[in-house]
Structures are given as C-alpha cells and as structure tokens.
Image (cartoon, rainbow, N blue to C red; front, side, top):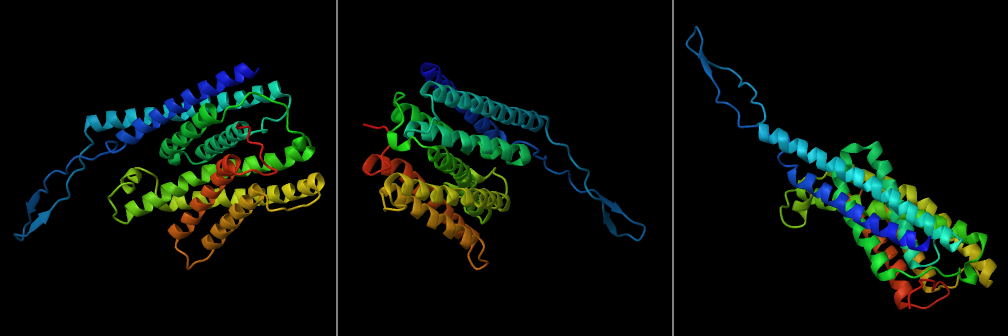
Length: 323
C-alpha cells in the first residue's frame, strides 16, 4: 500500500502538469477567440433633399481562423479541467492508500499534511468550477500551485510511514487536525483568486507591465475579489474552531491550553491576519486591493507555520518528520 501510494502521488503530479499545460494553451489562444474583423466602410445614400444619410455597416463575421482558434482554446481548457479531475482522483487514492498502510489518518507529518491540504484545495476548486464555469481560466494558476506544492512534498518532504507520535494518539487528532487541514485547503484556494484579483485590478486600471499583463485573460476583477472573500469567509470560522480545539487538546495533553509554542504563536498570527482581512473587507473606507493584500499576507503566515516552524524551530508541535 505504501509503494502504491507513492506511485499514485507521482501520477497525480503528472496529471496536474498535463492540466496546467492544457490551461496554458487555452490561455495563450484566448486572445484569438471571438475576434471580429474590421468593419466594412460606411455607405452613404443621397436623400431627396440632397442630404447624405449614412447607413449602418453590416456586421462582418469573425474570420474562420478565429473560430478554429477559439474551438482549440476551449478544447484545451476542457482537457485542463478533465486532467485536473483525474489528478484529484489520483491524489485522493494516494491519501487513502497511505492511510491504509499507516493504519491511521494520513496527517502525521509534513509530507502527509501538505498532500491533504493540496487535495482539499483542488477538490474545492472543482466545486467552484462546477458552480461557476466562467472561472475556468483561473485553472492555470491553480494547477501551477498544485504542481509546485505536491512536487515539493514528494521530492523534499517525503518520509516513510512511521507510527503516530504518542502525543498525537488521541481522538482530538482527528478533530483538531482535520479542521486545520480543511481550513488550510480553502485558504490555499482562496489565495489564487486573491493574487489574480490584484493583477487583474491593476490591468483594468491601465497597468501594462509585468505581472499585470498575465491577468489580461482572467475573469473580471470584481468577480475574483468576491470569490476571494467568499472562500475566506467560509474558511475562517473553521480555522477558528480548529485553533480552539487545539487549545482544548493541549489542556488535556500538556496541562495548559496555550503555551506560546512556535506553532501556536504562528497559528495565532494567522488568525489575527485573517480576522484583519475580513474586518478590512467589511469596512467601506478600506480599498479592496488593500484588504486583498492582507489576505495574501495571511496565507504567507500559514506557509511560515507549515514550513518555517517545522524546519527552523523546535517545540511541542515538531512533528514534521524531517531529519
């Protein structure tokens, strides 16, 4: 089961790569689709009184090459979506077989945690895409994130299956870690439209330098910003519950609910930053791009909590599994 799980992760990475290429092709061909040829010259008719009466030009159909390119772009995008769904299925199968091999939930170290968080993120993306197909071009950036994080987990964070650390052997392990994983996966998805909004908003304001030009074919800035808010508003209460559950578990395991352990400290920092984002988003005087930057900062604190704390700090939460 362990070897099967490892192979499934490899296949999932390849499927995410195919999905990213499909979305990239659609992104590249998107500027050709629905292009309208130059309008025909305006004809003028002389009226009975000698005046010139202009007649509106007849619409000129799009060139056949534009239609073909548009069809190819749509096909590439659908291939990207299909490959993403296949990758998510392989991803889930890898987690299930890892859990069966370990005889526990597959959240015992950094490798397993990253795999689970990324799966939640891509599963949530497929749900969003099913509800709002017009966001499909955002899939290029989502699959890029998946390739980078899942490949990092496989190549850098991988550890063999080991028994669960005794301190984690509790029913709180399922309650606390499952909610942290779920909230983190939604936050991971949420940062994609957040960055997309910042680029698209700049592009709509006339900025034509890098990276704003990357957002030329993204959905409108307003829709991206609303999606960013919806995802964060959904994930934040779950994250809050996870932090509270962790404090209750700490009281039962270590005799104190809070000890400013490095991971506890960074979890609190993340909570404060995300609360600040939601507050800023609800404040009319705060510009949407300023609030969105706070959301991006929140995700950076989550990355610090996941990677930085496990690699550079030692504490009661040092269960990363890295030597």
